[in-house]
Length: 116
Length: 107
Image (cartoon, rainbow over all chains, first blue to last red; front, side, top):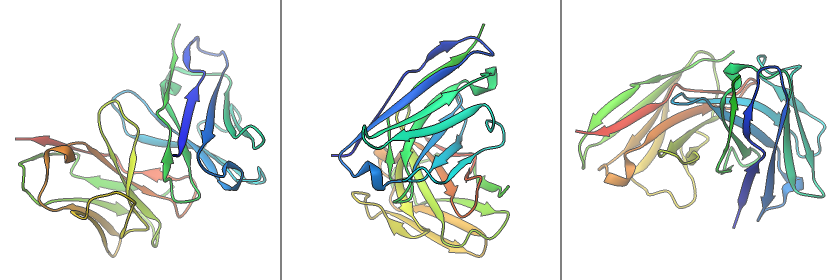
């Protein structure tokens, strides 16, 4: 059974940093391009970043480029999102997703709240 | 950026209805459109991939289609478990973009 389990969310002050993780199991993580997608409270889905299976290709949405860093450890089957210089508009549930099959796998999400 | 204009944003439905939700792409996105279902407090579930393909385990009352730049999700004979939010996604170009979502509510 495929599982993506996010962790590391919480409440953080504006301008501070937070790192969320996504532990994968049940599929060959090292073969899978992965992404982060977020959803602000009562809003739609918003793609954040994508990282290729081997780490060679990285894509970010404009509003997070230079502040967020997507990375992976294939040996640990884990995806990460380092979020720096956080803003109130980054408040959202962050989902990790398996992309290779067309966004076929999703985690349960982790809540990140940016507030003073 | 490619805009996916989704309509309607909400819809009042009855059990047994046939429901159609549409996303209009602002540029050509070819076959790279998926549809997702999301229930309250849950993560999205892929229903349709590459416009018309039914994902594993998805009931056959769900179908996807394309007419020009309009991509549609149709639910035939709506069941109570289908009351949820629905989202389209284009993954032809970066940034990947979702439609604004459609909320189905029972009359």
